[in-house]
Length: 485
Image 1: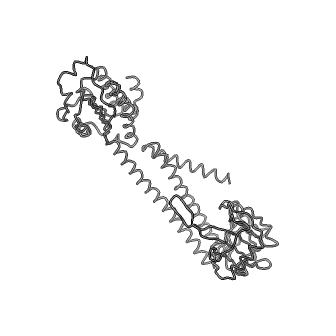
Image 2: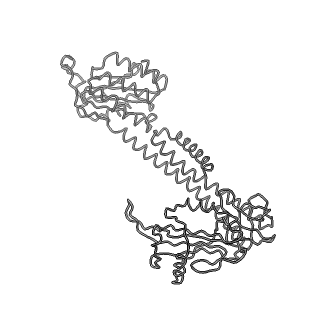
Image 3: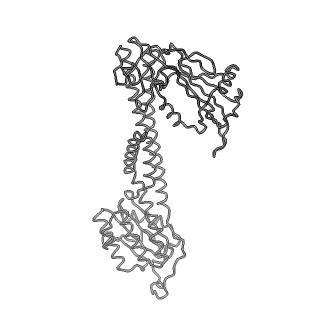
């Protein structure tokens, strides 16, 4: 089991890695979640395709058997004929029907409390099966079947007669059941694989499992419990597919697989294999289309959320820091104390990238911002434009930044930073080619973690320079230019 799981795990990780690389523009969290989920759907589709190929192979084997081709030693082969028992037939435990093989189940429905409320589920109480030594009589002779067979096309029958419940009660009294009160599907599969084919050569092979926790206190109630039997009668027309061993004239399962025993005449078996291929192909196509459509919708919603976050005005919550009393410019009436209008603010281009209407940003800092803007333009064909004002006087900063973004003709691969010092309001607007979901989150982090703390510390020059430098580093990958500014 571990050996078979390894390649699938490696394939899953490879598919997830490919999706992660394709989605990383949406951010680490979205890329990781999307890659892990999509890899599961792709693996399911691959499993369906593998099953389609196996059904196609079965179709070819059945067609070859119908054409008279004998099974080949050591190869997967098909035989078509009449199912018979070697020795006496079996008697099913509930309906007392003569059969070559049978399986049964006793179950009931009960309400279970879940987080979503009460849910009605089917609980299995007892399951079991038995098979006699089986052969298929073909035109070329008899072929023995391994007891590890998987019947297909044999449907269960619901039993409702009082005699059926009486026989089932008798069977429960005299049968020694294997405890499967913690039963899982993996347990059943391991038990099937553990069957010894030689055990059925001289007599029947039986398994009886108790899956209820009630044990000896179990009481069969016709008003509560449901009886089911699946019968495979002698003389049934079947097709068996498995690994053929010529020395024993026997069909056996391949490693980690079971022997297929398909019910019906040859034409019915052909139709069965064709139908299986169509169903599995439809399932594979549906999985791929539905999963990728869901991914597209999810990414669209994530991008919309990111755009809404980016469009929201980023504001600091600390009270504004008053200007020092020694600052003569604070007493001089100027446009810095009036909410500016976009038409009154000229573009700094072509001489620079920053306009300071507050008069509080040191000249050295303005020069550094201009040099950084030149580096972004020259090396990344991007733009970083900056406006610093004293106050907005409750004017909408988002409207001003949007108007100036157009008026200054900032490119779609550009960033516009608006800082209102006295209001401690910050707006970081991204151009269309820069406004990815990742950069939208980065812009919020820059405002919250880089610019705002320095504004609260009464360091306007440091706030603006640090914000522009971090934007250049994280959005335009200009680490060397920023570090050497």
